[in-house]
Length: 331
Image (tube, rainbow, N blue to C red; front, side, top):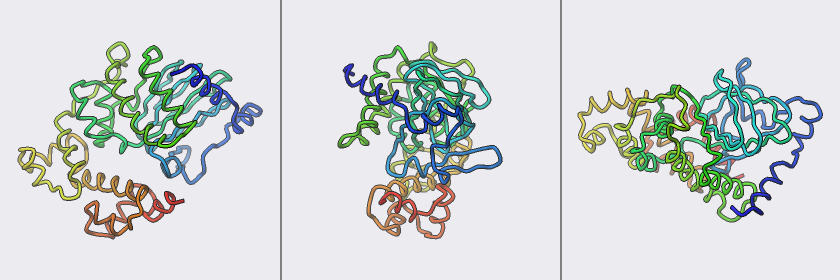
């Protein structure tokens, strides 16, 4: 990236935000997102996706400096990139330090808190959902058998990762740095099609990480069982979610129906029906957010035959009605 563009990003990130000015003055955390985007049970706070993904697939922000950020969890993936300086976090009870160039990837459900950042500490948050991860792309990189591949595959298929986060020390890998800086340039200084370009950069970023994330960068605590056998099944659901049945899937994959059913449950923790429903709901949400199709036509288009069941399943999955999703997107 040309130095002028990198300086442009740097100047933007180091400039104090209104919240940073107040936090610097009082050294007290000020909530930076609306209350409807969180759920609080006792001392536990969970961030939902309504606010972050109302009109975009990937949400990026600079973390406000000068005050501790309280413990919280997510209903989506989060990456933290250390653009400058360093920061201390407590992630699932583990104390971790990120230095300049480090990239932290956290799974859905990870709990973390961030200690106060100083003047020269710039941390960038990159939020995205597992629907941004294509099974086709996962299938293309499965031969790597890397920790990142297993991490993403587990999360996509509903398996709880043994460790909910990965840290990549990629400060000296030029391609990764270039991709991240391009993403920030497109996001903070948007042009036509910036959203589409950022979405295309995400699998490129992960591919670079898989290519470079070898034993030199790996954490010895992390060990994941291989789920390679389930990829073909997940890819089949992704392609034919509208009409797929367990019998059809078993025939196409050359398995006994009962064996496939047990294999799916063992590998993903979900039943065949639950996985298909999950894919149909993901597709329905995407159509609600990006098209003018009626809700009734979308229900039919994604393969639901029971309207009442669709509404109940959609609300359970996204904590809002389809009409609310459509209204937010149109707004």
